[in-house]
Image (cartoon, rainbow, N blue to C red; front, side, top):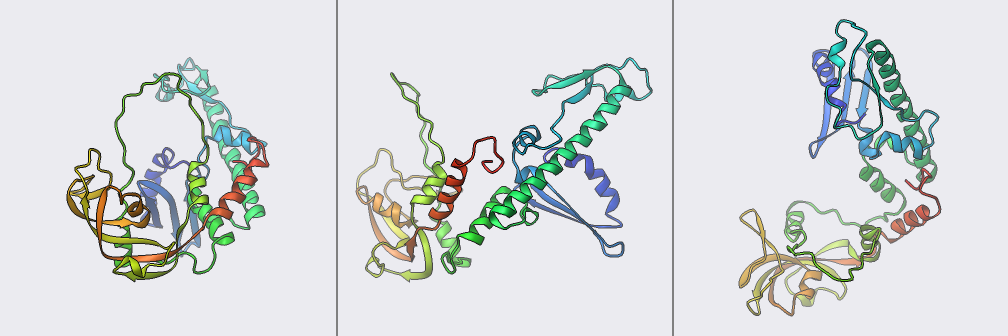
Length: 324
């Protein structure tokens, strides 16, 4: 079920059930992840999930990719009614301009009623076949059941944790340390430009995020405190509160801080939380005084995971489910 659309059809029924059943809705970032309906007295436990969060593609494309026996059909639309059946005019589509997919135009309510029911049944059967095939594919390759993971990221993270994450590799950070380190995250810096050029070459580069994950070092292991850079072993990654002074009046200052709920890049003197990569990259333009910080050993976390996934992808054509 796609909760961005289909959920509106079940809300009124959920409202009528709440007096007899316990209904729990899990939401995240304005998305409904799942709806659980339970009744201890009737031994009922039903969970409705949004399949689109796990397989974010159209049903038409998914049914082709997974080569299901039942393929996505063409939606029938009632654009007129010559049957004169009472109530039939309620279902007439007066405007179909928003449809970008193939549709079947009908002018007979009884014919449309029969075909729309078959269309909905076909959708359900096709999606069921897709989920069963996807469930088997994930279990055969990674030993996991998709039932426990409602979204693509949660499934990807579960594969990583079960097959590639080593014990005590990633430190558990919370409380003040978590708040401190998050203070160094300000997002990317962007500039407005006027696009212009002669003999411009355009390149399509794939998998930039995975390649960055695979080929860069990350903080690992024990959390250590420091007050001076002399205390930090060479090669460690660190985050520190610093006093900063620009060496000159920079035309385009690039170190970013949060100020009055905005992200700004100031000249002059200011304080910030900075990470070691950003620190060494900006020594030519800024002077720093370390106040306090945390340092970690550095290590490669994702290389084997990304490499295995990418090589698996290369083994199969785009039409194969495992490529998807």
